[in-house]
Image (cartoon, rainbow, N blue to C red):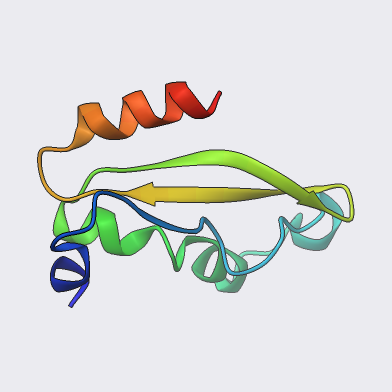
Length: 88
């Protein structure tokens, strides 16, 4: 379904994570994997189906970073890198 979404689209921009970054004190010592699952939920799709993606720092919410993930279709790695350079 993600491949169909990207057809005719140069870049798909999504939040890198579903939540703001947790504070270290909130996750230190946790081994249950729940936080990791939430933090990787949006990035796993591109990795799973082999699409190029890059996360760039975005705004901050309450002093914590909020990243933006840019995904492209197969073989658009260079395009994504050039786009990120332009955004810098």
